[in-house]
Amino acid sequence: MATVSNIGGRFDHWQTLLTVSNSEGFELQTSFDLPNQDIIKADIERVQSGSLSQTERELLECFLTKYCKEEKISYKQCMNEICAPFVLMTRSGVPTHVSYQYFKGFVQVTMPAMFADPDFRPLQAYFLVFRIVLRYHEPRLSAFFQLNNITPELYTTSWFLTAFAFKIDDLNLLYTLWYELLLEKDQLMLVYISIAFLQNFRSLIINKEDSIIAHAISQLSIATTEDLTSILQRAKNIKKCTPYSTRLRLMQYNFYSIDRIDETIISLEQEYCLILPVQEILHMAYPESKICDCIHVRCLWCAKRKEQISLMVIDCRTKKEQSSGAIPNTLLLPEETYKNHQIVLDYPDQFLESRGNVHICLMGSTNFKTSSFDIKQGSENGGGCEVQVMIENLLQAFLIKGFPYISVVDGGFEQCHEFITYFELEFLEHNPKKCKVCVKDRASHSILMKNKFKQTFMGRVKEPIEEKKRSKSQDQDKTGTEFTVNTMLRSRKTEGFKCWIYDKKANKDSEEKYVLLFNDMTFAYGRACPHEKFPVSLVYYANLDSLLKITSLREFPSVLNFIFAGQQNVMSFKFKSKDIARHIINQMKKYYAELRSPTKK
Image 1 (tube, rainbow, N blue to C red):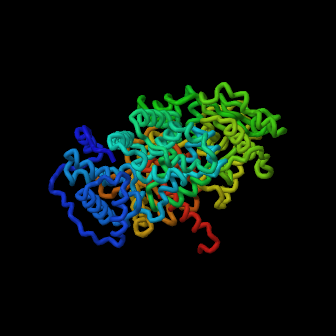
Image 2 (image 1 turned 90 degrees about the vertical axis):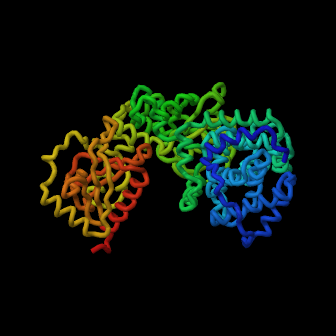
């Protein structure tokens, strides 16, 4: 590595970004007795530059050993490349204990739990996200790699495990890259930088012979200020051109939750391209309507949405489905496209002049599913749902012709239908008697009224209860309150959560706090009365087996909607967090299933 020079002042800013204490009371000493201590020593000798002094090598071993002990993890290769630049900060006068805390904080911020998992499953999640985002922004490169069997594992592993330390010899450039990474505070930023790196050296990659492509990529490096400036600018543009709602959706996967990483990987493996949330579609279809769940005029979500490239939605349903209702400002796929495969292949040609300037989103009937990430040129994909096959063929046609910014609608028309109904918006030429979603909803409701546990926890909601319509005269008497609540509290299975009644029309919560109680038999809620002798003033209670529906829309994760038999209105509650709401749904599903089980006595 090159000598550090004239960067000491910049490290003062790192202290704020990493919330590092400058206290000298920090103890760095440790014993060198890890089971794989010999591997640590060997890796220190292989640090990329080999320019560390003996004192610095000893300090690097101390940093790595102490970190492994504090985090209770085993040492893994590539940790040495991440740690060495922080050891070298001491050459610019950064105190040893501060440089160690910088190292520890940097790993925690940019790749938490990456080294905690022995199987590197967070890295596997990164590979999957990378290939999806690469296909969205660089379909030609994505297809080129696929054609030559070059998977992300073959060339991005060191990028993600060392945050490009393995690709940059000049410490000044590396520190600049890492500082920008910290400023972004975005766990997807390494993905954007990786794609920008490929863009910057595209000509050096695609001109290589098939057998040496992976090797050619491995030889690339960021060697000049111009290279780094170009890559950072490209990365920021990639981030800007990625739909904000999609970025949020990808970040919600939480690559670094070891408890949920297997679930994350399974979900990502099933994604063929970027998935666009319904809310994004409705903003485009109903530009004059208030759809975002914000209350304030300055909404980050809305502001970010305005920065994006224009969106075009193609309704890929059959003519019969389209004729029973369509969404405004969407383009209907012509009926003849379903009759001739060549028309499908030629369909993208009409948009060639807009290629790269418009985001094209394909909408099917329901969720889009595919068994393979590979592009199958010329495949007619026989079998399966005809709309699903059409979506897959159109995606391949657009990608083969090099169209960037191609995605599919999350949940298709069915999910859009849910939202449009929820927000009381208008369809074009909607015929509820022929609309597949409306017919499905009616059938589901009939089944639910018979108390069969099918689609109970999914579906369209009706008018929510408005908090202003309730008065204390509607509450049950105090004796009933005490009897019901006391009976519930005697059960060890009873759980209680503070909440607020959610008013959908006004898009706000009640000022008054409520308490929701439930166990394996009963559901209840009441006003919170913390200063009275009895802390809950009961408003409503019911047997759990009379529950008809409980829903949680993706864009309102902390709000739950309940429908019980005998209740014409929906009860909507907002909880402190989406995790609480998810827990309530899971528990109530479990209890309801137990109640409806034939073995339940």
